[in-house]
Amino acid sequence: MALDAPVTRPANPRFSSGPCAKPPTWTLDTLGDAALGRSHRATVGKDKLKAAIETTREVLGVPADYKIGIVPASDTGAYEMAMWSLLGERPVEMLAWESFGSGWVTDAIKQLKLDATTRTAEYGEIVDLAAVDFDKDVCFTWNGTTSGVRVPDGDWIPADRAGLTLCDATSAAFAMDLAWDKLDATTFSWQKVLGGEAAHGILILSPRAVARLESYTPPWPLPKIFRLTKGGKLIDGIFRGETINTPSMLCVEDYLFALDWAKSVGGLPGLIARAEANTAAIAAFVAANDWIDFLAADPATRSTTSVCLKFTDDRIADGAAFAKAVAKRLEAEGIAFDIGAYRDAPPGLRIWCGGTVETSDVEALLPWLSWAFEAEIAAQLAEA
Image (cartoon, rainbow, N blue to C red; front, side, top):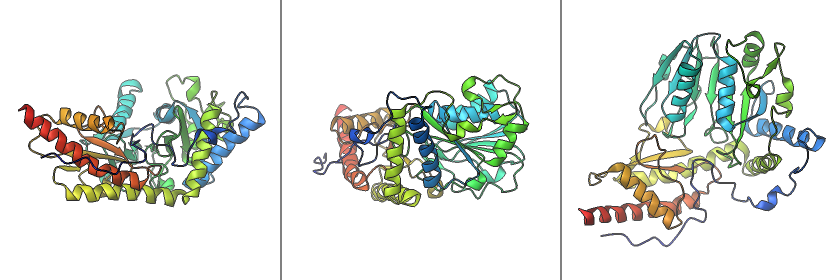
């Protein structure tokens, strides 16, 4: 017998894993001070770009001697800029347990043709972190956006490593405690945890990464938007807001608002707490219902932002079709938008739980998951 539809609805049905929900207090009016129609090289533009960099440093706790740059093409552009500019000096280990990490493997092997060792795990699992060789450069994602699996912390990375670590942190920055002393090149995009507008990336370099840039020249051509050095020296202006190409000052204004909002909820500790509260609500729901489970098997490596779920009921004949139908029902009701699993991932649901999502909205969504599940089971049995 199908359940009656719940009465309470999420105030905000936006649970997409990217672009993600904007901060709860966001309105179009927050963009009123944007430096529109002005050069990003004018004083007003430079000041806003520098403020974006320094407030990022403040909220994330990035060390003072690390360089922070705003770069083109979102997290993809930032990470590929790091790979193309830093790799090749020594062998590399590529770690992948979801689709974006697998994309970096393709770049390393098929495009850059590096001397690479690849360590992979199935969706829901993680590689053996203790086996990683840090005499090599190591590329990995902190949080697997499409698998719901994250590294537990930075303890597996040695402080005395010989190689560099290149970390894609796009769904972890502003939601997890990144171990900066273990990270040499770190990237993320505005459109993830803080709900910024797309197409801008952040690249953060440690002093070790800067030393590599100034002492090593890759053997392949570097497009202009990847060039971080000139005459063997770091182009320091990039890390003061003198961007390689023209940024959107509207997007910059949007990011500045999101950073100020982050500070208003307690900075990084507050953002982490909000994400963990959202995930805890889902964990309680999963524990109370035997037809659904986390895709990530180990709670220690379970994401608190891109929470991936799978259906476990034996009555489901076609997992992919069933999951799509459940997501479609929820979207049609205006309850949850864009929560289907990523196209390359196992069938299921993916619910964004980053800090811009209110826990009350997650709690309101969960009874609707039961409703949609029961409705789809009933429809399947009626067709049988």
